[in-house]
Amino acid sequence: MITSVVNARDQYTQCTPFNGKAKRYRVTVRLLVRRVRRLNEAHVPNGQGELFNTYRFHVVFTDTPFPLVETEKIHRAHAIVEQVLAEPEDSALGHPPSGKFTANAPWLTLAALAHNLTRTLGTLASVFHTKARTGTIRRQLLAVPACLTTEARTLTFHLPER
Image (cartoon, rainbow, N blue to C red; front, side):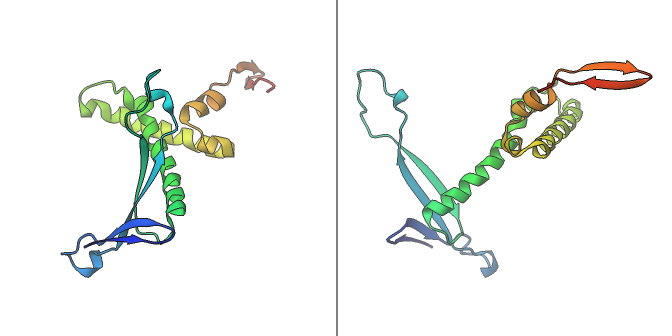
């Protein structure tokens, strides 16, 4: 069952999926669509105006009671998680060593372990590194030049002053 609701604050479509199922599976949800004029004019060739107005659409499917702007803000916070989950594809998972799953299984395990350790290091390091990409964490925290020396059978790392 789909109904359209127009308030003074929001315009949204309200629906109840799984209407043929038991009542415990029914949830009334809202489909929010926000239309924003595209600000980047780089896609328009020089000397040629736009034939059609170009808009971006932000779509949120939610069961929260918040207004459109607050719901979209919450939804964008979830997008950060998706970026973090997409990062392993930019590193080890983007280049598996073999075309067979059994050969790639140890590679997948080590890649997941390395990604989780890198994210943990970033979280422990600072608030900036908590939200930073793994490449930034590797460049700023892991790839630090150091000199390893031995004195009296003890190993010492000499790190840069900064």
